[in-house]
Length: 359
Length: 222
Ligand SMILES: [Zn+2]
Image (tube, rainbow over all chains, first blue to last red; front, side):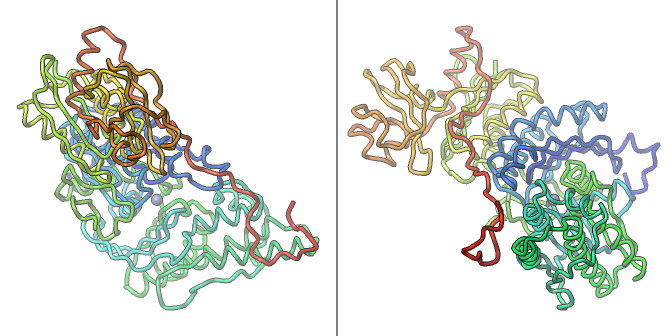
């Protein structure tokens, strides 16, 4: 079951069930070898919308309700039975503690009932590994830019199964958080990402307001989005105070441009600094059209090959967890002990969870 | 029959196996922050101790609280998944009833457990363990006074009662016995749905907070 297993061999490859509950999506994926068979998601996003952000307890309750039905839906979609599953993988962290725990306990119970190995895996590593399902074996080394409502990280990935080196991360808000907050300022619904993208795409002028690019060329791979969000709010308030209408499309486009500019600049710089020829982008913000376009343009100019999974695989899902589980299994990485914890701050260097690592 | 019972609605993670005539293995640990780590291992442990396998299980019973949500969900989701994967029936049982079943009282009494935020989950029982009121969540001062109290609530809030009774936590052995007895009586099993008793803490936001100083004369946002 090597990476090059062809379609003929694919049926012999192990079937991995992946469970993801780190935020508000109950994701269940089934991967055979490196082939995606099913990716079922139950989202509680609508229940959070009126609160303007994910409410952890609401998410946890929804995970508990959705868990068994979502697994069943994935099995049905893949045309397999639970008894055929060869291994189970689950997000052990990072994420919302209570939400993670539902998935971890469910995965342990499946492992127990099926008597199959269980991998507690790192959510960020899974975001990187998922691209395997769409674009084939991951090039090594690669740089990964992971951007969502919960995280914004640049990683050096010598080997997604065994070694990930953090290069930088946001020092305040995650990029997706900035999208949510700016959306509120502009009177757009939660989650902000798709709405801002749409508003910007409706003829918004990306140069309309030159919003600040924090830490743009500071020599680090860190990000900061808190000041940008404040700058947008200040600009909008000044406009309203002057009694002028707020050009939502232009502000959305200008804000989005600032985020995409910083993210892609730092990602490409990291590739160049480390002599890496491949950039993988993942996380919910990777669905943003401007980020994708600008990344493509800058990677091309820098001679970096860009890999971005389709939007459905960029947002949190079970397929990414199954994909990483399949990789770990194929590479002979030891399974997790049954007593590993859900760890809301699992460091990205810990690709699999081990018992007692929590301090 | 091989019934697996567990409860994680209090700081205790308690697991037991019952073969239809008696409890054949049990394991309990008290650690309010490690339910998710301890439960699956404890289930493996009792199965091993009884020389049984997961495939031998015929029935499940789980404490459904009320209890602090994160720990409670560890047990409930485990029960739901095991029932679904092993295709065996599962019964949800009120955790306070499990504690009450262990109380040796010949008069009415209260079971109270820690609900955090200076509140307790409680219920009132007749001397024969029949639940008369509850479960509810209240401040200790709002729990009916004058009764002996079992459960950790009595230890946390001495003002609840002059007569603290044992036990502090539920035991899965007792949960298993209750479930087997109910099965024998032909009672319809309650579903394994958690008793939260509170809505999630969440407030709808007002308009976005201003970042610039508002000038007193003019309100900018409606
Ligand atoms: Zn994510």
